[in-house]
Image (cartoon, rainbow, N blue to C red; front, top):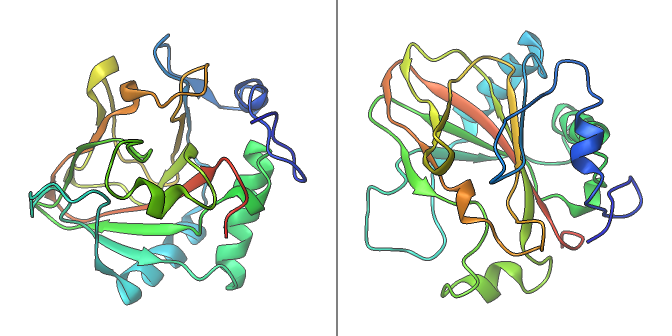
Amino acid sequence: MTLLSHETASEPALPERLLTVPGMMKVPSPRLEMFVLRDFLTVEECEVLIARIDRDRRPSTIADANGDNYFRTSETCDLPMDLPDVAALDEKLSALSGIARAFGEPLQGQRYAPGQEFKPHTDYFDPHGADFHRFCSVAGQRTWTFMMYLNDVEAGGATRFKVIDKTIHPERGKLVCWNNRRPDGSVNPCTLHHAMKVRKGLKYVITKWYREKPWG
């Protein structure tokens, strides 16, 4: 991987690019690259996406099934990339990051009801996992994750990065992004995170994952 532009994927300059964005905050940890930006999405953008998730959601799944039927209990919505509002958000993320849209997976929404969670996990695929070849043979490993909260949650629903002792609370329009790899390109276990149980209300998020090679 090299630096990311709208024509090519590229990596080393992405953190520097993000730091030029007004309001962008870098999480102070030497163990991973992670950034937070409030109000990335407008109220109107969030409301449209929430309505779409509510309409088209399905049970969430995981790679490398571990026998725990309660490991991920949320619901997922696959967002059609040919819809104008979805394509506009995809372009907005590409403009922010500098990563060409071709390197991104389709946008995905998640909905968490009270008691639902996604236990501690990483977004990269385990290189030794049973499903690694299935998910990574074409586009390669996941590189960056961009996650956006669509609403304020009444209670619970925080995202906890245990290794670096960082907890991020849901806030409408807030974007959180992180590099799933170490500087040498290997996967970074310090990105382990827990979508903690919602205690009251609902939680909606949108997630965008980028890959080493063009998607599809």
